[in-house]
Image (cartoon, rainbow, N blue to C red; front, side, top):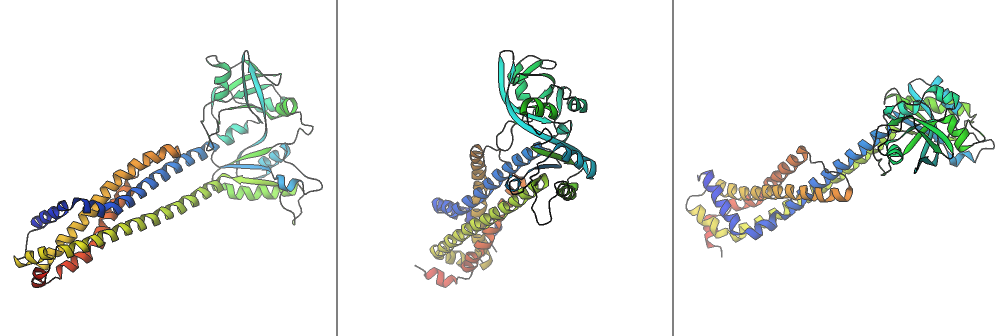
Length: 405
């Protein structure tokens, strides 16, 4: 039997003799592996950005807001109120913090600088629920809310726009002609999933915002209630309690729908998980189809190669090559083409991943597992689709092969 080294040399010479055909044979594998690696890298990068942006909202987070579609359907519609928030904090187990919220927008002025920003009227629970860290100064206090104090905490963007190099703590800014003393500045969080600047806001006591800025006749009414649970697992049970409590407080009959809605951060994470699973299945299907198509291409070219090299096979058998040697030679050629296609596909996939990341605006994440899997799978494709041509070549009769024209 001919040595394996000799068979490798013969296989290498055969592939080098037909460089263009060898390249075209591997093209299907190159495109398949490259597409899969690029798609997975961009997908993982996008998921990473989404996870980071979701985490910026705060963990164990729940957002309750009036359901505008149902408010008008009641003869005596109810809105969310500060007392609703107090009842949730008092009567629902599993809450870490509750913060009613009133929002408006206004021009903030300091000296010759001015900046239009979002004004959040809330309580000290706001920073706990949304996981905001005070970088300098202090946060709101319960006493500020009870007294309706004209104090505020600035987001990093507002502080930079109004004060530049100056320390804002203790300075007085005007919001709709109302003077507010800056008592703190929040640490930066950056941009949200939609590209919104999360640091562009001012936090003030909810009582002050209601009385001085919104001038709402019903100062107890709020735009939303934010709730932080003690854990992610507690959110579902907490949501059930909140639904029962608010339905009772709003006197909603059993046959009526809620006049409020609840957005649970765990529901967002579940939706993201399902979307990721669907995307992974889709990419997996694309991978299988692409590599199978590439494998079929290898098999077809190898079958053509067997036909073209029939006389060569006959001569090799006549000088002592066994059927196993012939089978091994063609199998090595098929696997070599697959592995070569896999390596080139990896390089193509990485290049495409970096290119797509600029369009998607998220850095690609190349997992070692996906690269190794693509490489191993390309080798298996070579073995699987190269076996039949190799087996067919090994069955040729030396006499018939030498007679072949």
